[in-house]
Image (cartoon, rainbow, N blue to C red; front, side):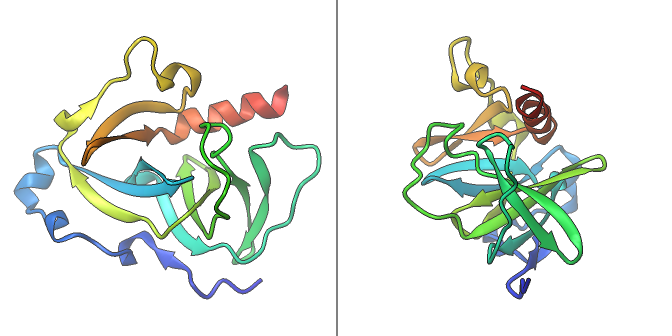
Length: 171
């Protein structure tokens, strides 16, 4: 399986506003990876992102929950692939072109995404906690939100996403 378009997160394009000083880093600035799913923007803590690669082929795995669409071979490592668009109620019109591999402890999973992600630096005070009747209750792996332009961007929590998937597999 050829994956020539592989990019490590450090190689992804950065915004000029992302160039922050060591003093700002020590003050709690967070680095996030902005991803596009079904035309909507979400974010993941960059410390949980292992790498990004172009999705050239995958192998379906029968009997898995609908969100687990298959596996890909990443330099000899089998990576389960998840498509969160239906789970989040997003458009399935576009075919995902890339995979962002996220990890939590020894577990990793590839999230299929629309476009090459970008990284940004944010102030933790800019995060907005979900309200009582928000998407955070129907999708427990969204733990917070961030205002990006005039839209809210959901922050994906990888540990909660893995817990959610384990529950879906057990059902």
